[in-house]
Length: 282
Image: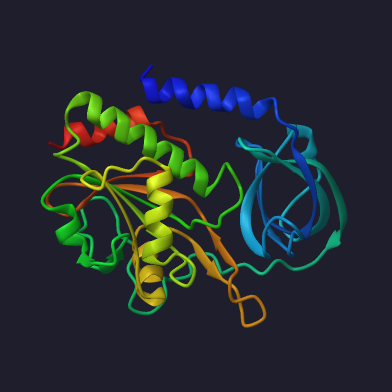
């Protein structure tokens, strides 16, 4: 295990010794994934934790999913510590028609879902140093892994997990000596709050080497289009909750030619897998 991996393990052990905080969550189930022990919930504000949004939540035990399905209205208790967020109690209140897109619904007009082998559009971004840079310039002819986050995301198993995965990937790239030949890119969904200064502070806390790992944001519509290109499902809040951001997790590997090679859903990948894929493309 890398020294960084040992540090992460030590931090995880320390976090497990700390007391978790419990919050009440009310909302509607939009999907159930029994294999992953997970439900997709469109939930109300969780006071003291996060605004209303749509996101997947792990449940503590598999039998908690018995008799639950899309449309169910629920109240639940969630425990959040430095390492994870999990539903520990769930009560069904009733059922209503879920607010879901029609099966096979197309992307928004002008937006294309990209598959392996297809070229990624040359999107313009603003990086953590306030520089305008396009995707081609950031790639610089290197294979690159792209993921999506926002810095105010409060759930350890969501955006912070992507940060941890990329931090360990950066360490592995340095160990293998490929840190100058492959790259990492984290794209923020939240240009309103994730200004270049905020992204730079966030990157510094993670120990980012800017020659390897870049944080960017940009115009909201452009970011949404780029995320959708990468098969990210993104839901913005309406006028009453403009800061609400609901999204799935997706990490995409782009080859030296700017074409998609591979896409990982959720957190079902390891930094070692990602770095091996980048190394293979050199």
